[in-house]
Image (cartoon, rainbow, N blue to C red):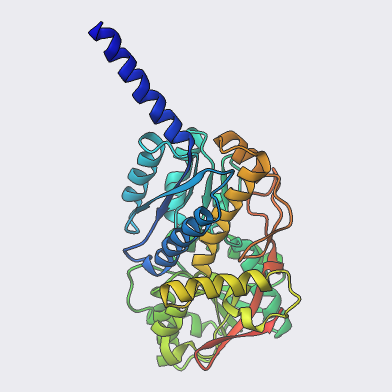
Length: 379
């Protein structure tokens, strides 16, 4: 009799546990809240927390509570791998978001693919989605889109001789591959190909070698703090060659770090950073205005494109769940590929089995830094 009661008790506990699990939808996130990429990861974490509250206050997803499990990888690859393993094996999430950086995403994405859990990255490297992995998606515009936007602007300015200066991490070297491909392919001459380390604090030697080769323009590819150092070194060397930055510095933090040396620098930006400058009838205008108001009122700090990448990642997953009326991992994956015309902070997403980013170069505007702010120079 006691054994029978014990069995019934265990069965009841298992039933309650299963029912409880079915009452919530678990989404995991690997985010660089601290460490070198914290200026990217903190707005991502904040955005996910804000959206979790908003979605649950509005009834959840398919009537179920949304539970977002966020782990801070401290911008360390090993921590990202451990966090991914925990989300897969212990937390048993139905989908995941992350990583913040390209290097960390590349380190964890195959873990999720093997577990057949869809991962939506917040990092930009084209290698994340090219070649296509059926389980891996990303929200930032790709390197290729940014490079094309920069080179089209350079052509309009009459530039031909291009120098590139890239950081030796995952994001920088993915960008370097695309630059080395597209600069000659689009009819430019690549006159210099310099590299710096993510922890380097002075790039005067690279810039001096570049200056000696007389380029018409320089393209820097990296994330803070390196590009800010390069901007200051360029200013110190009185190097007046136009300097383009990648979308990897699309935050106010870059302008703060570079100070007056940021004036006149050019870069491709998502419209979130210049929402007040886009026309009222643009499809993204209402969303961007609402996200900015919600974020800044809650966290009392300006939004950044990087928080927008998290908004897009979670809301694309939500859209896929609602499309398939299922939070099963396979259904989420299948429906992510079917999303068309989805208005996000980074652009209008049109996913397909051949395109797991869903954006093109029209998701960027070209901007210049003037008076410590972004100003659109080309839509």
